[in-house]
Image (cartoon, rainbow, N blue to C red; front, side, top):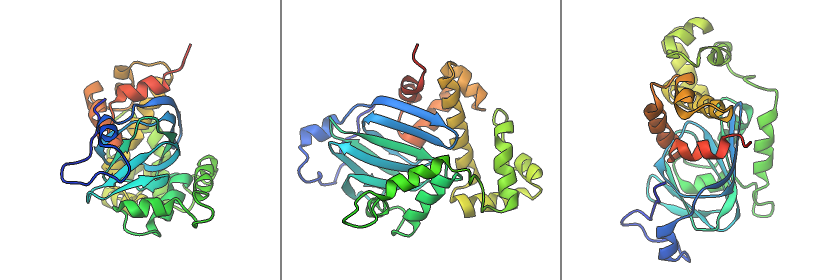
Length: 267
């Protein structure tokens, strides 16, 4: 895995030795994949600049993690909610441990987390991500359990326009194919342009980005079932394993081999 260092021209975060910044941490832990959720617990590593279609929730339980936004602002994070589609970089000092949850923005947990960020400030600023994870200075990161508990809610797509709900419900049946917007729109009973607008308005993502996220989650779940990376790539509608690797880097700043190692069932 490539190790991310402090970008040129940026001051090192106060109190973090330069040697530790250059080395970074390594990913080691357990990942769980479920509908609408990819959760990781364990030693947190570094991830190169990336933007994913998921809403990311970060909770640092031990050690130090530094987040960098696209403007070059850096903040040490204890807890954060990073909205979908926002470019960021994660650097973990060796010894950092915690929880990272990647939430489907269409699910109840993703929507709850996204709403917190939207009311906390500018979406692409690291200070907003930290503020969204806290209710007040006394309760600290108490907002996060409530957001994550919504993952198992039966609310599903409740509150979405009927056409968007129908499209989301049809995706699992079509995931192995090209998953064209026009095909989904026909299932939903609206035009492709109208459905694309609904994705952008209610999920805060263009449809192609959301489709990549849905495919990546499906590939991870397929690997978790014992498939090879190539088999999982084809089952999720990717052209090949190289295509899956590129998307994984774009979404998580990591190679899929790291995720495969974490989610593959143990004998």
